[in-house]
Image (cartoon, rainbow, N blue to C red; front, side, top):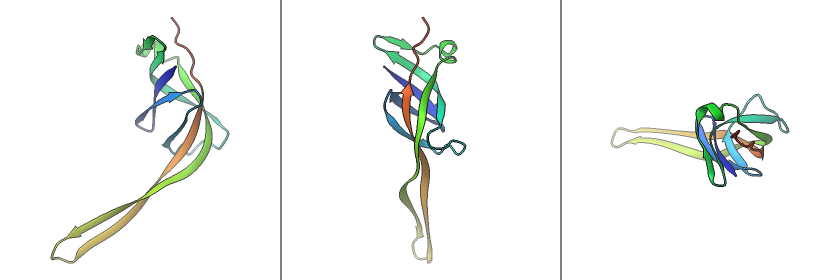
Length: 106
C-alpha cells in the first residue's frame, strides 16, 4: 500500500516506514506527529483518486530530523564587462517517517 501526498508544493510517493525529505516544517519539533494531505491511495488492486473520499484520509508521519541540504553554487558572469556574482544556497529540510496510511472507505 502506498500513497501520493502533497507537502510544500511537491508531491511524494510514500509507504509505511519510508523516511522522506520534505521542505522544512517550522512549527514542528522532532518527535511530533504531522498529517499530510493525500492525492492518491493505492491499496493492492484498488486505486482511490476521488477527492471526496481522499478529504477524510490523512497520512500520519513522525518528525525525525531537521537538517540542511547540499550547497548549491549560483554563479553569474558576463564576458568582457567585469561582471561576476557568486551566491550560495542551502535548502532546509525536515525528515519525516510515515507511520500510517488509513484505508479508503468503500
